[in-house]
Amino acid sequence: MTAESTPDFPASAALFERARAVSPGGVNSPVRAFRAVGGTPRFMASGTGPYLTDVDGTEYVDLVGSWGPMLLGHAHPEVIDAVQRAAAAGTSFGTPSEPEVLLAEEIVTRTPVDSVRLVSSGTEATMSAIRLARGCTGRDLVMKFAGCYHGHVDSLLVSAGSGVVTFGLPGTPGVPEASTAQTIVVPYNDTAAVEKAFAEYGDQIACVITEAAAGNMGAVPPLPGFNKFLSETCARNGALFISDEVMTGFRVSRSGHWGLDGAAEGWRPDLLTFGKVMGGGFPAAAFGGRDDLMSRLAPEGPVYQAGTLSGNPIATTAGYTTLRLATDAVYEQLDAVAGQVRTLASEALTEAGVPHVAQAAGNLFSIFFVDGTDTVTDFEQAQAQNVKQHKAFFHAMLDAGVYLPPSAFESWFVSAAHDDRAIERIAAALPAAARAAAAAPPAH
Image (cartoon, rainbow, N blue to C red; front, side, top):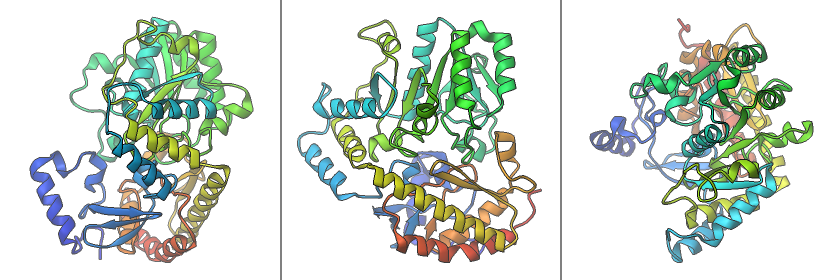
């Protein structure tokens, strides 16, 4: 079976046809449509532990994990029990409730923020953090890095990674030039470019925003000291440093990526954004930071931000329960499994003669189908990969019952539920997938 063929998944195919009649592209988030890899998107019916089961009854080892939130695996019994009890008490109140306080306390305990505001999506978190940074500094310009994705905020979609690059888009229609004109884009991991931008625009830059470790062009960690450099450079120039931990927060350590660099190096971002894991599979996100900055938010200050479902009692219950269960042992399991799967994939590709880089940022990892380099450090290198090899590799793994991200520019995610049986299934699928990648056409 080739990557171009459509296997016999009648229930998924029928649902996709119905979905295309009522939703653009038949999906509610673009990468799900399989446009980059071809074939029929799988409509999932259930998830348990490290496995997904589609509507045709096929089971897959899941290496997407809802794009990060499922730290403990699917349908963890304690999370499900807590959610059922919360739902039985009412689904939404439009008032404060105890679960949102518990979740906020847990976030403050684990991270360098003094206080936190809960919202409903990572996009909303980054949008609000940038508004707050502009409100606190009185400046307009935002610096971001090519290939870093911070949600579909107008001013941040220029040179974004993730689905934007998957579909070959430089940005998107519908974003006014005036919005992107307020954004300075520099190469990731390039300190000289940052210094040059500050030399030219320093007194106009409100903030620098970066993924704490880039995961939306594939897994690209910051070079040693890079995040510290950004923090110190912002402080010298009166700008704020926003670390986007929507993807890495509470996943790569109990304190997110800051727990791997800032905590040891003695610095902290001015503002941070969170999402995914902190919602336990429900739509929940947050932004937080120093008290003097967060106090500028309404109702204490003049910077307005609001949300009808922010702090939803079911979502915050799921998030708090997930974080409470995310012990040191869980993170040890995540790191071990991620390292094992990454090594197995690299060994299979090496055996098949496929040039590649298997790269990690904490326990986020991905495969870059590139030749001539041992590391990928920026967006330009990530874009140089052979996406045809990824396509062939993806479909061979899918046919063998392993669900990978349907894009060459996304990170792989494991959970604490990935056990020996799941790893054995991945290992069994890899040799044939590597041979499929080796047989793929040249990149150009």
